[in-house]
Every structure is written in C-alpha cells, then in structure tokens.
Image (cartoon, rainbow, N blue to C red; front, side):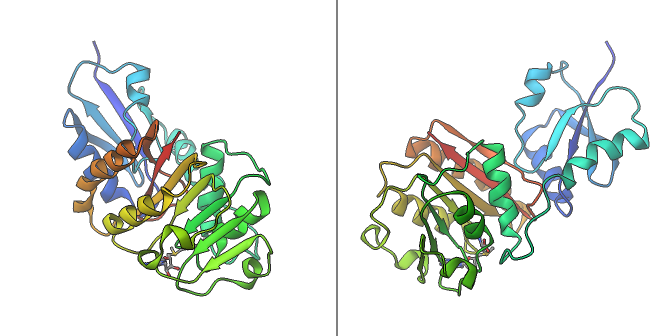
Length: 256
Ligand SMILES: C[S@@+](CC[C@H](N)C(=O)[O-])C[C@H]1O[C@@H](n2cnc3c(N)ncnc32)[C@H](O)[C@@H]1O
C-alpha cells in the first residue's frame, strides 16, 4: 500500500501554532512538503479513512484532508483560497470583529431572527455587536472601553461599561439570552471562568462562542481543559473551529 499524506491549511500568521498542534496531538504524522500556509504530513500508521481524517478536528487548521499524488502549484493555490473566504465587511462597521461573528453564524447556521438575543463579553468598539444588531434582537455588550455610536444609538443595544469580573448575574439583562459570545483581551482562563459564571443566569441559553487568544504556543496545552469546562457545563456539542477572520486565536464553541 502506498504512503498516505494529509494536508493542512492555516490562516496567515498561525503556521507555528498549527505545526505545534499537529506535533502535540498527532504523533503519527511527520512533516513532509510544505509551502507557506499549506502543510503536508506523512502518516506513519495505518491509513486513515476519509471519515477519520475529517474527525482530526484541529483548532488551528482552516481546512485539512488527504493529499493525493503530487499537487501542482495551482492545486495548492486553490486549497489556499479558503483563507480569503468571507472577508468582506461593511465600511461603517466599528471593527473587523464583524467578520468573526458573521463567520460563526455561517458555520453554525444561526439564522437571522429578531427573537434571538445575544450578549458579547469584550464588545468594544463594536464590530460584532453591529453585525448582531443587524441580524438579531436584543444585544448587550460588556466592555469597560467605549462603544461606537452606531451600536449605542440602537435602542435594542445595552452597553455595560464594566470589566466582566465586576458584574453579577443580577446586573445582566433580564430578557432571555440565547447566545453568548466572548472576545476578551484577558487571560483566557480567567475569561472562561467569568463567562461561565454569568451565563448560568440564562436557562434560555443555546450556546457560547468563546474566542481563545493564544499568546504563546505553550498555551495550546490548556485547550483540552477549556473543552472540559464546556463539557462539564453540559453542552452537547463542544469543540474548536478556526475561522478565516481569526488572527492568533481560535473559537471554542459549546452548543445544546
Ligand atoms: C478584541 S477586542 C473586542 C472587539 C469586539 N468584539 C468588537 O466587535 O469590536 C477585546 C476587548 O476586550 C476588552 N476587555 C479587556 N478586558 C476586559 C474585561 N475584564 N472585561 C470586559 N472586557 C474587557 C477590551 O476593552 C477590548 O475592547
């Protein structure tokens, strides 16, 4: 039987993180040909089926699959195109974070609905909240920093201008909240603790999307702990997904 090769594509600037993730999680893969953000690995074990390859589920790969035969430069360019998908956002958006939430809603098929309410922790200046206000019902943004006027002037928007650790459940809105998203610039271990503590207010909750910013590749080790936090919370579907709008970060999701 011929050797099996698996390819991976990462977002710009995340090559070192992806390599480390593969090295830590899949010891049976050894580095082979790579070109920029396109990496291939040789499988040293029994060949994986297509299903097993899909189940590798990497936190820092945008795409992966079996690499069959010698790939032409055109074929590699084609695979790298995934990095450019869904990268346009409206000029008036207060920030590029608009893209992260748009892509999240696309990946998890969360359809626009004015009866669906959201909270975002780490919401300023407001790109994500702007997207949410355009597509959903009530939106609450938590951030000690200033929110853009485009969000503040919307009557369905509430700004809680406080650090997340200063909030109690009672201070958060009393309406049903269906999704929580977090994009905090704080230590992710502290952030996840605060987000879980506050989210327990809502029986209506369907999911949490938690952006994990990776300061050092050493922190990759804690990703499994984060997954456990969400599993222990009781979410049925828990995992990581890399979005093309991500920089040195990945999205932890927990869904009912
Ligand atoms: C990447 S930015 C968020 C971008 C935002 N999601 C958007 O759509 O424009 C990270 C934010 O986390 C906020 N932040 C940092 N520490 C925080 C804390 N303890 N509680 C709440 N927000 C915090 C920062 O003020 C900053 O605005």
